Image (cartoon, rainbow, N blue to C red; front, side, top):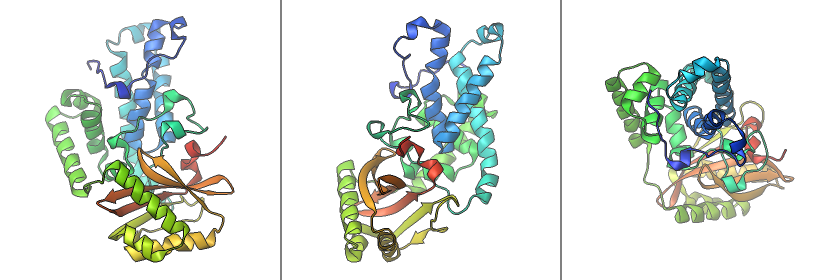
Length: 316
């Protein structure tokens, strides 16, 4: 597969002092951030993305030097291997989800400037935040077939040609084009016109204040009549097992949470590139909230409580 030059936001230059390394090794390691970005979008899990990248490099270094030198495009080889590992994981994800307790939500990510410590403290491992990383987008991706997801992300986000995508997923270019078309159709069907970032931030701030005040009427006024709230505890902490639907039901659920945890602190934070909230008890992050704002109302809320998905938000 020919080497792709993905946009600057998707690549990472060698670390300072990289000149001391073998140039070939430096070039290989500089692909790490792109691979993390790719795997996170495909899997919706930073922990799984890190594992995929580790396995990809393990396969590279399992080859002899002669085998490595015979590869025309190491970058293309790494992307192909990582994508195929992701495809295999996505293929088994449905069975794993059937065993998952409650609803499954993609792992939320903080803004790079707000990143604390955890498994991915290294800047090279951080995921670039753009519109392809919003919680709403990732949730739609999760509804796709593995092949649709890989075709869309590789072509529309990382700008690989359908010929290159075909080589990775083992289908014809025409089939990959059709997969991407089908995936875009799903996105259009699920997507609502999003409000400008400043307006989103204002609505989330108003929601936070109404939540703190336990003002049910104010909360209902900020929610779309058909608003939904989904919580993900993974069976490790308490969380609603099914989506909550309707503005009044969602508002009452928020007040119920505030009553159950009188010491709860709500902090405005960037979640997957958009305004969100972090919930803390005794300075410990216990949940991260992502929102989809349509017009001047909140349409969807996602609350991640599973502690395994909160590592980038918690102190070491």
